[in-house]
Length: 431
Figure 1 (tube, rainbow, N blue to C red):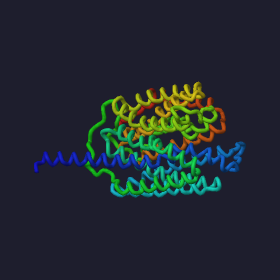
Figure 2 (cartoon, one colour):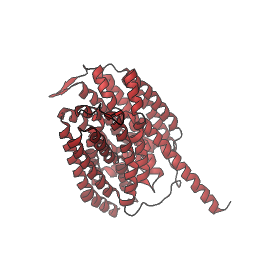
Figure 3 (tube, rainbow, N blue to C red):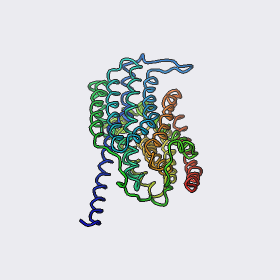
Figure 4 (cartoon, one colour):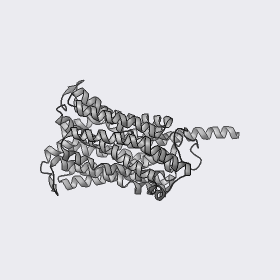
């Protein structure tokens, strides 16, 4: 066989391997999506079943709903704040063992978290389930995103977008099944059976994963419009960079606005008086749950692809401007059923892309060598932003929440265009 034909065969095998690895982590992300995006369907049944789950902290009173939503905050915190450690372990164990061992462990924890929820008779036990599930979800999420940026340096935005889409869109398939199980067998049964399904699938797929070896991925530079470093920064070097902390602040602001809606979608629909109104033969809240998850998931590869072609910051400006408009429209017209579905979907469409844009921007800025742990450090911003969820409950006025969200999105647009882009240009020019 000639050298040319050998090279051609190698390229074909490498392409097949890359896409097999990407599809595997996408399916894993689909399996953990319910931990966050189906949560809103469990809150009301749990509140009705456990009205005594209340407590006071300083001058704040947490009623049953607020106490239950604190479990969501704990989940998000553990899902994000431990990802630097999980990412460091993946990179430390190497490309062969790191991804598979971390995702396998994540599958066990994901299943265990919801199993604990299914048996929880105290708020403390529910919080324990949130801790376990958060650890598992973060292990899978951080590894999957790190996998995508390493296997696809030539199409980083698209690859990360597709991976994140599995998380954002995955629960769209289970919105109706979960609500059916809750309505007919109780929320405990839904936690139990979906725990088994999700945990087992992730655990099995983990053993097919491996990272790229030297020379297995194409060394193709991104389009010139994408500001991309040729140097890999260690976690310590990254943490000393102003670019990282600016990205962190921007991530917190946009993520916080989206999480307030994600966790509170059903209570908001109820307070707006549209949750049980029928649209297209289905309750408004159910239709919104399906459409929102599709919009959330679809935004990630869409805006990832756009950012590969026009640049990360310009894509952020487009997305977050639309996001500000979406919150403003939801605040003004959300009491109309069709408007609630449409404008909530627009919020999800313009929020979900942060999970493709920020990982891509992070690796573009700080290089691929430490991509998993570096993204893990940035991803803790999502955990920080989770404090907005119980605060939204304490505010108690959804119109005020949406106005604040509008303002935060506008601020991030300004930061992306006039601070982040020139700052990254100067950093990369210095090398």
